[in-house]
Image 1 (cartoon, rainbow, N blue to C red):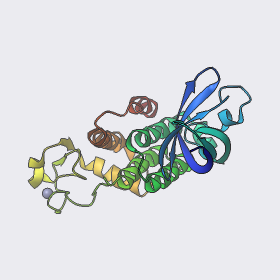
Image 2 (image 1 turned 135 degrees about the vertical axis):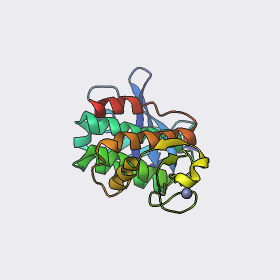
Image 3 (image 1 turned 45 degrees about the horizontal axis):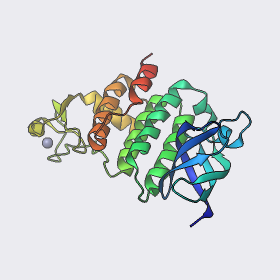
Length: 237
Ligand SMILES: [Zn+2]
């Protein structure tokens, strides 16, 4: 049945389509959707200028057939500082890819709100590394895979080193629980994750902490995140 509807959405991905159109993948509170943005590749297109990755928008959708058409759009948050800073933008791409590959058709209120907040922090935070790590931690929580950082995720005891990080375990394993397997992890990486949770700079161990989280996404999503290598090269430069 054809009809119009309005939706709030975060732009996850934009692809060129046909001669002058784009296909836009959106995360809405009601789930994922891909819509056609007619004429969005034309220089003066309002749809094209507003529908940029990471933007929070309100769209009017005309639903007929399999792919809805975007007939109107207004900007809710464009996150200018994020769009103009390669470091912030490359980290944002990782968060957008996570939601792109994770969300199905189901209810997505929590991921939607969590992603919007993470992008705002990434746009405004003094330390983009803290905001990136904090965003991934928050998204893990939003998808039901939150990490236990205060104690051993296996026995509940103190996190006594040497630590292991079993990648889909929901946290770290202490010396006594090393049989749980996983990769070796430093205490500084745990500290970096705790610091990011408080929006404090993770320091040098931030790189190790991110690598651990990316192993976790890879385990849950059954594939590596493609945008990580570029973001790491920007942060490492
Ligand atoms: Zn333990």
